[in-house]
Image (tube, rainbow, N blue to C red; front, top):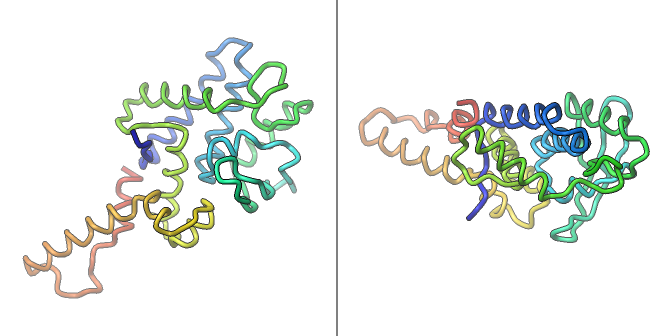
Amino acid sequence: MIVEAIPSVSLRNKLISIFDSNIHTVSNRGKTGAKSRAVYIRVANDLGLRCQDILNLKKSDINDDGETIILNDITETKTNKVQYQKVLVGDTAERLRAHIAEFPLSPFVFIGGAKAAKPLTRKSVWENMKNAADELGIEQNVGTHSLRKSAALSFWAMGASSSEIKEMLNHNSEKQTQVYTGSRKYINQAMVLDNQRMMSGELTDPSQRTDSRALARADIFA
């Protein structure tokens, strides 16, 4: 079954809140992993990188000037392509900065065990994603790739072009990017609505066509 995006910003924020609350509910042995997952989900939601590429990050892959955090060029696990620099700012950068400072002895950014000797695993993230989605009653098929697709939809809905998103996600083609953004659904919906409006006489001026991105934003902010 294909993993789907989570368009709703409200649901994504609730998902993040559950990851935060898990820090206080797990055993002491599991707190390190819970803290890593709570930061991971913010980075994934902001950047749309693949799960494993985020989990593979080491501190040596990061530059921090105190305001922005730059992820250096990395080689993607899935494609073996170079994923060029990405920038984190705001709350996500602050959380990541504090998380790294809390575990100074580990070479890894996202830590899977109390001894900080191993990175967080994709299975751990997936299990917590599924549990949180079930708790929230999210109907979509949710997995670690959901946040990559959710980020792509948000980028497009807020005005980024397919070529810009293609570069951000490091896709081979804009066709692949359009699948991730889900833009075709909203473009088709807008065209059907406009055809109906035209037939009813409501739409006579092409400049008044339905904004497909506005339809996407309606789902995002529902």
